[in-house]
Image (tube, rainbow, N blue to C red; front, side):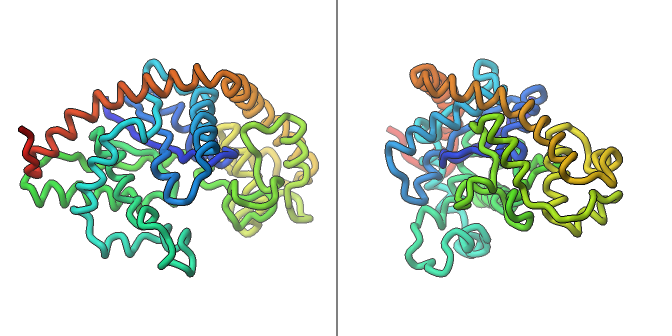
Length: 332
């Protein structure tokens, strides 16, 4: 069976975009792949983190994995910093990757902003760590959103260059998995911007821990335009807020946008939003309730992470040993 690796940063306030773009797909992939899901707390350090918040958020992401339906007994859930293979392989990949490759990474430019000279070195080289995350387990497939495709291409380049430099066929060439209608969920307040935890308005997103009443309120207040829903996707795509809500409905109901428009073309947003609210509450409500229950029992969450780290280490350790032999480390 092919092996999947994917990770989520523990930055707090997991929202609908995280669920539709990643977590829901993680659950579906369990049936066809051996899955390794990681809370990437090392990646989180590329921006300063409050230590207590980082630990809390690591548990919260783990709770979300479990609440969404990932089976921690059949698959692996762990936090990155507990498995030393990630850091070990990242250093080797730092020496394989080229500066020019990293200079092309658009996410660094976006996150560093205008003051790039003041950005952390970790933020600059974290795509190499992402490659190490995947290849420490010789994962063959990675579920990614559109904004991560460039990093996955870099991981493929690193794998190919390592194989070429050392005359081996050791690392697999990773294949991306992009699924679903809503791989990119937009803000409820601005359909041209991605839904984000960093948006100052909590009404821009639906958090996984929101109550049913809060979900209903946020959808009711979501920005739309004065026109009824259109008949075609071509018309819909000219209206970003309408497109976002229809896309969310399609993803939550496992339909296409065409299918949603077939039912709601010509409808007013008031009626559509009511149905969307009911749908969102039915899907997200049980997840939020289970997350809250799990967060009240941190010992149980930690036990899942501890078990996952042990099992992840058992896979990665022999791979790292072979890599060290390939590059010429002396072990006496």
